[in-house]
Image 1 (cartoon, rainbow, N blue to C red):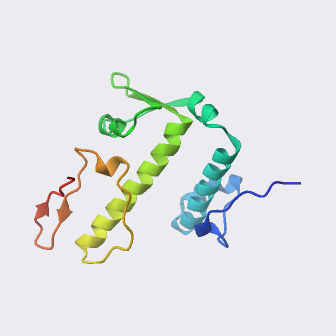
Image 2 (image 1 turned 90 degrees about the vertical axis):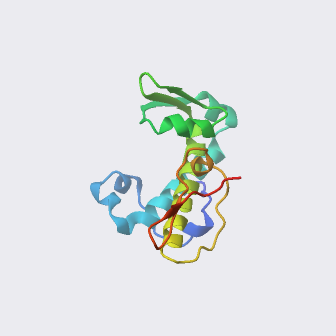
Length: 154
């Protein structure tokens, strides 16, 4: 019998994609957005439920990254090693999960900046974690007259 996996509250009742659909070219179509997000949340929940913190810290992967990682690496206290000469980063699975969280909070922050620039209100408070809170990250706010104002992080 298959074990029932936990479902993120925002994904209940939403259609999710089967694994083969995630690899198809059409999976990137915008109408699959909610399904892709829910699949990602479910995958992360599965990994966290089935693996120990020791496993997450012992297993790594390597990838080539851009110059922006010089700044982004400052958000990590462990689990990430950047070799600037080769442009490669080695991350533990634990750091990879942290990266996903940092990316999501930064995207949410940037969405809120766009809303404020359009005169729209924001509803949630973005957690002060991730890449967007690093010194050196662009947190300027555009105003209607085109002037940009630097956001004070202190």
